[in-house]
Amino acid sequence: MDVMTHSSTFLLPGNDHSSSVTYALVVLNQRLPRFTPILWDHAQVRVCADGGANRVFDEMPLLFPRDDALDVRHRYKPDIIKGDMDSIRTEVLDFYTNLGTKVVDESHDQDTTDLHKCVAYIRDFAPNLDKSNLCILVAGALGGRFDHEAGNINVLYRFSTTRIILLSDDCLIYLLPRTHCHEIHIQSSVEGPHCGLIPIGMTSVSTTTTGLQWDLTNTEMRFGDLVSTSNLVQGEKITVQSSSDLLWTISIKKV
Ligand SMILES: Nc1ncnc2c1ncn2[C@@H]1O[C@H](COP(=O)(O)OP(=O)(O)OP(=O)(O)O)[C@@H](O)[C@H]1O
Ligand SMILES: Cc1ncc(C[n+]2csc(CCO)c2C)c(N)n1
Image (cartoon, rainbow, N blue to C red; front, side):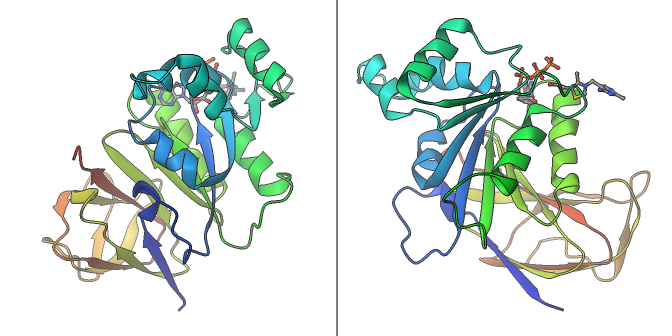
């Protein structure tokens, strides 16, 4: 079975020229995580999901209190605003349209979420993007309305062959497909130690891990019985192998 490696280097400032990953950023309509500018700088394409554009407009300047708000808004200009356009304010839409941001109104589709629309766009259409090792970072995906959180998690399953990482100020979540053995390299300056492995939708018949305080050894997990929450990472490397897709979650440090 092939090994899939994971590393949250996108939380670290600076350009990692050795990385072969192409990052894309989606900003949702939730309070911006404080490290959003770092994600922005790593990304080669920045997409706002509908009201996510209001967050960039309103909150990016708050992350740079010493800078002029207009300068900050020019520095952090989304490439695309996409969604059903029922949450973006007119002044925000006008501001970014004038700066050349592409706006795609998909209000005709009321069956998929704005995040779904943004991920589909990045995966299928975004021009000039090397998609051979694409990783989509989603800012503001957790905390807040539970129906939105569940919808965001569902996007991980609907696009299970695309690397997608849901982020909030407090934690990140991604899917570990059962098709691979997983090696998770912990960036201990910015993440951990609290973590979890969560089977959603079905019983996970057998999971084996190394590197956790409470490792699993051919262990069954399911809702209504055992799920691994409040676990702790012990070293710099975690391995996970499972008969089912699992969600991996790890806390993000306040630093
Ligand atoms: N409180 C929240 N928690 C988590 N994700 C959110 C939250 N609010 C919005 N989002 C995400 O941001 C995206 C854009 O938000 P927006 O408010 O524009 O959505 P919406 O489709 O108008 O939602 P609704 O009409 O249900 O309020 C949503 O599709 C969702 O993925
Ligand atoms: C069974 C079912 N439940 C809810 C919705 C509503 N809905 C789901 S995604 C979306 C777009 C949000 O921007 C809306 C309105 C639906 N269509 N079908």
